[in-house]
Length: 129
Image (cartoon, helix red, strand yellow):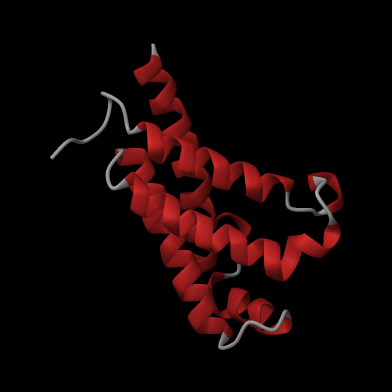
């Protein structure tokens, strides 16, 4: 049962980051693509915005794939942690803890779950090399 639980958690984390990555990179699911996301990054002081959009989108896409496949989880968790810490520092931190107020609660959950799964391991239902 533990392996099935890890698979469920990995898939959900993976889908979340695939979603965000494809929004930033391709404008899918209501996203703005690199250009629009880059402009937003510039507006919050992250420059060059297009580079930040491409790197964060690529990081989210790659980490999502790693979690879904269950491979290189420490790398995936590190990427997620870096991106979420950036989101906390630049966007959510000043708004306090509560997610409902735009705070950093959700970012911390994503960090904790991704690191926790990386520490436990991918379980039996993963690609193994």
